[in-house]
Image 1 (cartoon, rainbow, N blue to C red):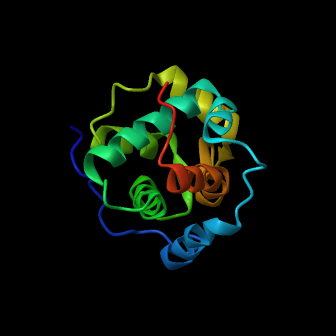
Image 2 (spheres, rainbow, N blue to C red; image 1 turned 45 degrees about the vertical axis):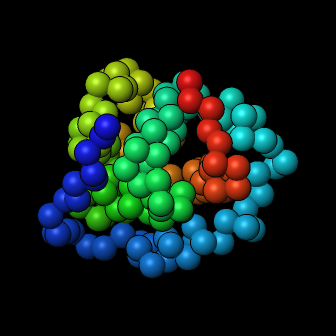
Length: 155
């Protein structure tokens, strides 16, 4: 099984635009999230292969190490851990560190990581990155589906 998430040392940069308590409020409001009437399978099938793989990795890690956490609480922990310097931006390096910390460093290839960041990220301060708020907005429907049905297709 994967080891527990290892968090980064205290931030040296300014705090993110949205605080951890605000993130938790966002995730607690899942009952208002519209999944467009899509089932869990349809939502998962709509993902690109790298994003689908990441969802499977995170789901497996949650089931092995955080089975008693709600999906929202788990995703809050993941987002806090992946944004190691708490600047509200997730770089490819921070993402690779998260995969390493959860024992999944070999689970995604460099091409898959780069493809995923190319798809959802942007160039921030000269490097590929994605804003935490964008990740939250993209994944909230999946967290809701995990909560309601506790079912994610692992592919």
